[in-house]
Length: 468
Image (cartoon, rainbow, N blue to C red; front, side):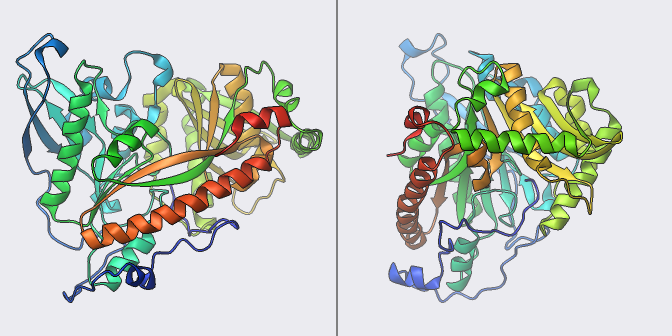
């Protein structure tokens, strides 16, 4: 969800807090400096910073045998206050892997990220100040980019560090502002250090990570967080001083199904029967489901969906970050990459689920319905079963159904690991948080194993999803 709701821990977990007592156990020395304020709201910052500073230059350690142009040695790195300061072509050359369309991630595209900024979603007023990193060679050719934000709160991230902020506050430190490398309001795994497909891309990756760390030090802030990176990036960042954290989501995998019933036949009999019963309740309520893409999605659809989105955030005590204009804009700019699953009753739109279509993945993002309405099992139909049917029809390999929700397991969505990397400037806090994360990782792996063992698939299929 793009709205930030109160955290309701899984029944498998204790409260995920890192409080004062935990830091005392780590022998962290309390700093006697005076605390002026700690800000959770989006319109304040705990200190005055000079934004978009200059960085570098940096040197590429590339031998002449690796490149056709041996003059490429120096790399300049700049910080942009808006993605609009770079061309769409330059950004997308870095964001989109040119070796294969199956790798396309719509959330990393210029169209999506610029839509967030232009419609006032990821801007200073909402606590997401763009500070994007751009690396260029001496001829001003773009080598790589990083989506980056200076933040005054922890909302809209889906990797929860509020307790870390509490601990900083208890010891007289400011946790905010912090740097956040992510796609705002979007818990979707993907590359975060976006580098063009060049022979020396590993060296450009190293330069960009070094620039991120330098910027954190230059701002004199608490930390830098890279959330939902690829697993490969996650491993690389460990060797560059980042703490490692894992999380969990629920994804559906396409085992070369031709029809929805093919998927059902892979389930245990009781689970298959339950899904069929749930789906029968949709037409019984006089509900008609539609999957719309591109020009089939009209302005009326987006206006209705915005009201659904607002209803969801209001019911969950969340914060509204996405604007009405945002939905209209992504519909125009992303075209067929946007899929809106709608439910109608008596020709009236009553609910909808927003999805984005990637190279090999359908990404489920937002759901909502009319205020004060209740349609049993409609949420399961719109968000899970329709998404599975769409993925089979489009021959996509998986469906990512968003963050949280153990109820997804019995509907064919199994636990998968997500990743985040955290660069903590203060040595004492870094050691304490590292200790916490080691314990949390053990617990998380155990929970994922238990959840997977309770999966809905037949035994021979579940063996493919075992966790160590």
